[in-house]
Image: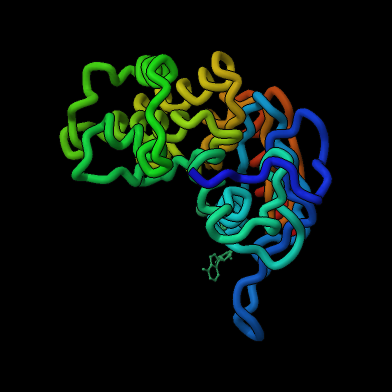
Length: 260
Ligand code: ADP
Ligand code: MG
């Protein structure tokens, strides 16, 4: 397995911070097609904290997640996972960092159809040439309630069960941080609530750091903190959110958008 350097020449943003973006900007296209998707975003994710990212469609949420997870390049600024600054890594090191230190949950599950649930869950370890830590694997599998479904293929599972597989896959390598881009966007409210509960459990019980994009004030209510993005900029933040307070805040933004 390729070792990812844990210490680079770039100083760590702050102790107790799992990941951070500093002055992060992302510009797509040029000339008339130029879109500033992210405009100098500063944001830190503390260890063991559950953060929700909200904002109108097209405001840069997915771009922020993809840049922070090393899945996309950025125009300027820096991205830090633990004490590693991503621009200090070559392609091979970046691949290893994504595999070993970052979990990503997609709206569309992104499971491999020919693999069983268990094989999908352990895929990051298989790719790294590592065996599973049996105790940890059992804990993650039982947390997401999949012990009876491990031999099933994705087509034999409901959407909610498939996303539980994806949650377990994201947690299995004990990553520094787990990102979810609208992880409940394709689920009915009951299956969505289960997935949100598992993510919250991973924070409370396993000390995992979790960041998720959501449109849903109820989903945001599971988080410890909500950050609001608008036009590629960070515009507000709320700690200990409740669905009602998040909804109020969203209405205030909408009002401003219509009058402004
Ligand atoms: P969100 O996830 O909040 O809906 P995105 O991060 O997907 O927003 O997009 C932010 C902005 O960047 C939007 O204006 C979008 O049209 C633009 N954008 C996203 N991806 C691309 C791309 N590959 N090429 C050009 N523009 C893009
Ligand atoms: Mg998006």
